[in-house]
Length: 376
Image (tube, rainbow, N blue to C red; front, side, top):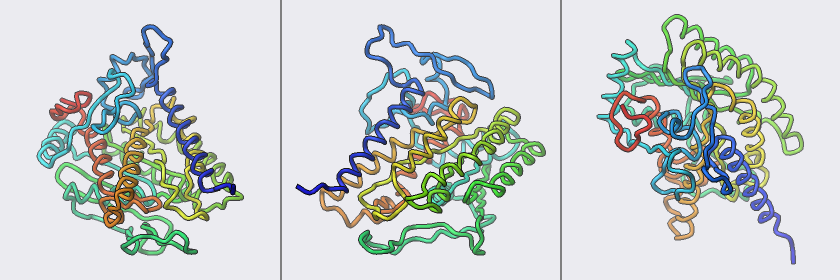
């Protein structure tokens, strides 16, 4: 009987993804030993730049718990961890957002800034956020290029996917949107190097001059390194990323400890292998190499690591597979789903990311009955 290499590859990827998720759960203290009598685990959390030891009873009151896998309580998720670790999500309606931003403006004396630096995934997330926020464009030097509508044929030599590019043909670009009480900024992050170092230095200067306490910076990197390598030299990209990340991380720590900015590194969520051509460099096993590197260097620092979104993406993949199984394939290319996209998530998933981000931005500013961790 002939070996199905596609099936073998899928099995290996699933095993790697499972192992990676288990490691995160263990490192974050979510998984408890079945042999312990009291299941008491002390975890290290960072609060305002200081490391403190906290029990689960204390940590479940911290809004930053939303970033951690195993903490947020999703309505579709089986409760496989202790309820002591669980926060919820408050749907961020327009009225709630308006109230939150007004309160923050009073508290800090200026609008809140949300910075997002990343590649095409983050570009489309910011585009969703600005539409949901009703924010007006102040600067747009990036262009989002949607793939042609309809199903993709991955057996072709080239397959068109959604992408982001600089309007001037350069290597980087930015988008800035504003509404009352908020500035939303996106920065295209290519290969880690001088451009991103200059970007972070600009944020540091802005913090010194105008203050940035409780502003939010979300970063995600490694996509350009992966796309600019090949199967044979894939680890060259990983090593290049690691070399530059070692220089970048202290700069991000400085933003947290010296300026009280919230800095979050968004690791790579899983992709759907069966929808991606065999020759593509977008592979789960390679993505996990970047994730493991980031987790190893970042988890003991005051920079947060966003891991809870991986569960959201896995659920999104399951919903896509369910639609295909029930022959509802006419919807899978819609912006709401984008099931066959190499990188970009559907807006149904962006909605969950949005609520996560703004539950955190609005920490203690408004009442959130469904999320006591962040409720004011």
